Image 1 (cartoon, helix red, strand yellow):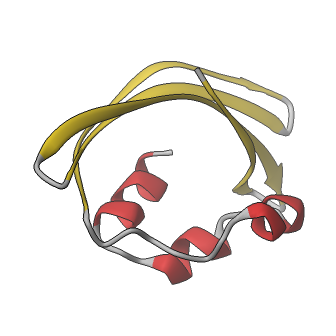
Image 2: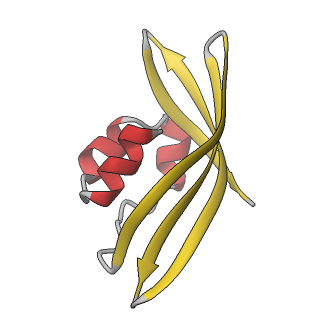
Length: 91
């Protein structure tokens, strides 16, 4: 999760796409909003069970001069030792 947050903050679309499962990638619009300035990531909870992982986080960001936050529960799948984002549910 932290590496994906860093990729978003540095506009590294290639890394973001490389760490997504095909199903999630098909829903991703392939764009990073350049108006967004990522400010902080707080991981509230993480759990690993076999090849499945769950991360609950709050990401703080600024867009058009106003601060906002995103609260999400993300699901990951481990394939051949690497974690891939499968889906996220916003709260």
